[in-house]
Image (spheres, rainbow, N blue to C red):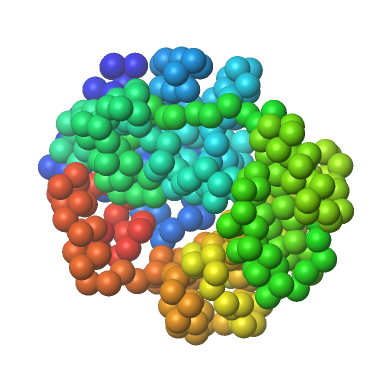
Length: 354
């Protein structure tokens, strides 16, 4: 593996010296995400395998090209999981890709986002140097924020080689409920429940149906079921529902209409925008399939205190992520220049000019 890393470092140095650009690709499951990928392809699949796993410490160190399904199978064998439920999108999804994309699934509102579980990282920067940040324990704070900054960077800061991640035990019991509710009623209920001691691990609303997943100790789940009422889904239905929402295999995501991912305060009002919605994370993440212009969508979302990402379909040459304020854009540029001064990695994938 050291020979492979050395070869990659040399390739990066040559690209930096010649003005070349590299497009980092794991399993290709997220090629659709962000602006159009450009540059010479550098595939990471050969850098795979679990380096160290300590179930008692709730920490795993894994190479970036490792298929996500392989890591999750190993964790499941120990009754553990990646609690942020990274979307897999396709069978070839890799661990490095899931961190670089920074996307989390239905459990995110209950446990935290991707960066909350990144303890350390090893990567090749735009100069070809191999750097290491963070470590394998939560108490190790040296470089901790640097490794977390890789989450959602879409490979623009460096070539991730290895990651140390915090894992959590799988819940002892789970149950899913369904309620009839309109959008405003669903948002009201979700915010009311969010302030109560309920073991809610996921929520979703669409087309008049509000779904709630309860996870935790058997007694806590049973008590919540009695308190909340609603219609219970059997295990097979529940698994299909949450897997479909996590991996975007649910029919909602199948249309070719532009799909927007909207991040809002959980107590924000109803969108009142033309299109079909799906609401997750207690109201904090709202999906919108719509032909409305980007300006109209972003204007409404900004008025509600949030931001909007064009997630799938639509124009890939224009802005996909919400435009940054001047100070935030300057910070992004400074970060990019510090890690990749020659602009080798995934140029323009996040924002034009970065």
